[in-house]
Image (cartoon, rainbow, N blue to C red; front, top):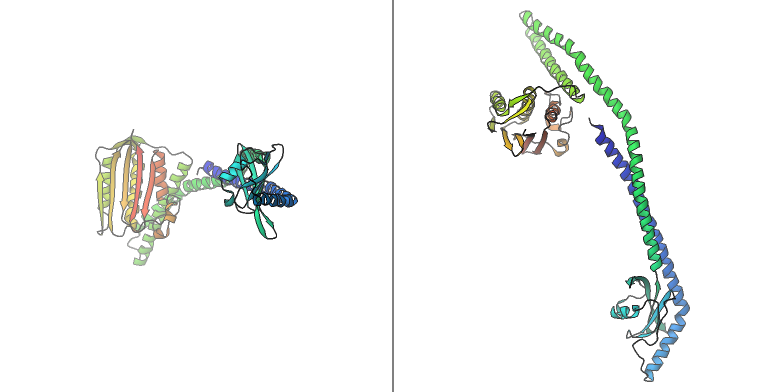
Length: 425
């Protein structure tokens, strides 16, 4: 078992969780600061309107009086004053959206508002715009006297400094996020390492126990199996039919125990990287032909075993282990396919040797598929007395030892297909 991926995953979860909390805090802080600043600006505009409201209405009355007397006002905004030193600006419009009077802090803003159609601006709704690299916030207020609509006034404030302040805050928060992410990753790596130590120790202890137990049990089990074999031969005539049946059951169970111990010993050696492959030039095509023909003699009559094996495919490999690999996969296919066909194919595809073993069995549920190579794991469809749940783990170990890849695809009611890929050398 590789602990580095587990450690990395723990570190990722720890760092990711803290980073998400930090990002949420930053977003909430940004919304709070920007919201508080904007509310303060809106309140400042509302106070300004209440303070100057009477003067605005008087100006509108004066404008109406001039219109009644036939005076013509220059609509080139002769009464628009440009006062860049002020913070708050205003523009008074009549009901025809003609500009009556105003104080401007950003040159050209009045024309911008006229071009955008003042009537389209909702009353008492805030709006932010940027003009000539200056950010402004303004509100349109109605001007009424004795329930008579006189026009409207747009009051605004330069918020460029506040915008820059918020941008600086954002950059600082982003920088802090990067710094804290690195800190979280370092701390997470440390704590993940500490958390993995007892797990590694327990796993090493368990693995050593399995290896030692497999070694120690092989000798007494061999003696036990030999004794049963001698007893079956020497005392065959003296045993009752029931006794012979019991003896056969014990012999069968001892054979299963022997196979289980051999499997455990193989996996233990694989974990400790202590088993060596007997590499030779192997004619893979010939080996597969022999194994398929051997299985054809034992498959039930309701099953057909087909092959599509390209001749002349060879590789450097351990013949015994590759034979064991193919046997495990074919045996699984025969065991779990009640009827239909099993196919075995071999071909060179590009830079890879690809072996496929496919059946028409019930398939493997998606929930079981990701655990298919786990030790002792058997899904609901394979819970039977035969097998120990180690076969596919051993198959994967053999493929990994030969630096190959093994994959499985399966659909419910459509069968299962194993893919084994080895590099062509």
